[in-house]
Length: 262
Image (cartoon, rainbow, N blue to C red; front, side, top):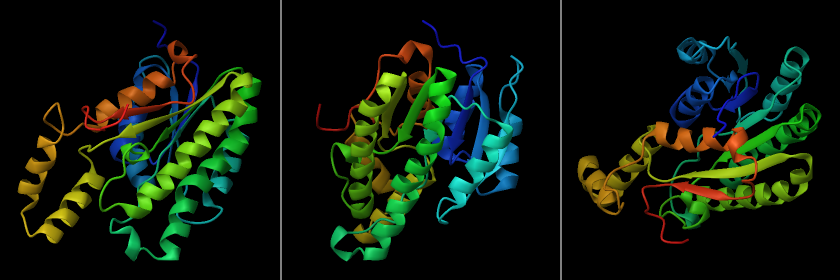
């Protein structure tokens, strides 16, 4: 099985922590040069220093704030002047605050749509021609199992994640003839800061402790535990390899079997 990403360059968004950070680590271990993109330079530097360089990989930092219009596009345009060939794009950014859909404001939808779908579109529009010229392209979007089964209490996220999944499927049809694959990884409950926020929200609304809420949630997962960021990252990294060249336009849950649909 060809999992070798030597001489490939990957741009990993939201890579200062959580699943983004774990994915950057996995890609580097497979031999890729990694460009870390997020807004905190100091944190990115720490992540960069942890990445594997045993095959001569070179790693870099790009600063962008996904909540600010134009920030991502400007950062990528500048990046391409010094790194004109990028083979792999990992679209990943933090989700919006939780809460019932009926209580969500229009601004919450607009901001989340910008943070996720519009930023993804900006990145792909600039990188797809680069990937086509390079003869190798992998786009992986870190979304959520809410694409298949809405998660109670995450109304805005459920809505926008679904839009991103449809966007990705459409792109897979358009970019497939160029040899560029587009796939979605759908994390379930995963041990990250995002899960901590969900536990806190559910504890407050139920009057239970966070530990009790966590135990109840884990009992709903067939494997009996939350996933780790590294397990989600492993799925994302595999989709970036030559071995995954014929996998495109799909949603891969990494949730311990919890999602109740095929």
